[in-house]
Image 1 (cartoon, rainbow, N blue to C red):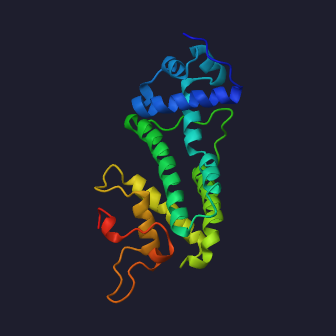
Image 2: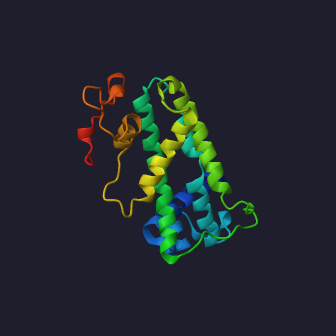
Image 3: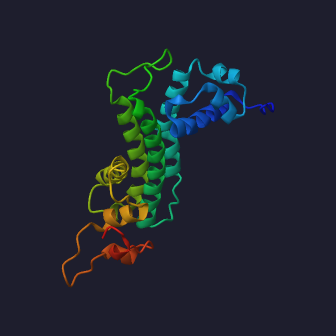
Length: 225
C-alpha cells in the first residue's frame, strides 16, 4: 500500500468518517475496518488510532450525518441578492441533499434492526431522547430565519412558521421516498410553498408571486399536476 500523505488529526478523522459513510450506505453494517482503511488509503491500525472500535466508528458517522453545522453554514452563505423564490429554492436544495445523506445512513442501519450504538464514554446520553433532533431543528430554523427574515414583508405567515414549513416539506418528501409515487424537486416544492396547491378563482392571477420572482414556475410544469 502506498504510504498515506500526512494529515492533521482532525482532517484524518474526517476522511475516515467519509470513507465509512460511503461503505455503510453501500454495504450496510457488513463492512470491515480493513475496507475502511483501504477506502481511506491508510493502514488499518490508523483507523484504531482515531476510533476505539467499529461501533465507535459507526457512532461517529451518525453524529456527522446529524451535525447541523455544515448545513447551517451553507444556508448562512446564501447570496443576499437572491429574490425570494430563488432563496427558497436554494435552501430547499441544500436541505434535500443533507437529508438524503441522513436517510442513507439510517436506512443502512435499519435492515438489520440495528439501533445506533449506545453512548460511549465521550458520548453521554441526554435525558431527553429527542435532544439531538431538537438541537438540529433549532439550529437549522435559526439559519433559515436569517434568510427568510429578509423577505418578511413578502410572506403571508410569520417567518418562523415559514421556516418550519420549509423543513417539514423536505422531511415529508424524504420520509415518504420508499412509498411515494412522485418525489418533489426543489423547484416543485418552491412553487407549492410560495403559490399553494389550489388554482386561483377565474379572473384572478393564479400566481401573483411569479411576476415578482425570477424562478417563473408554472403549475403545468409540475409532473404531478
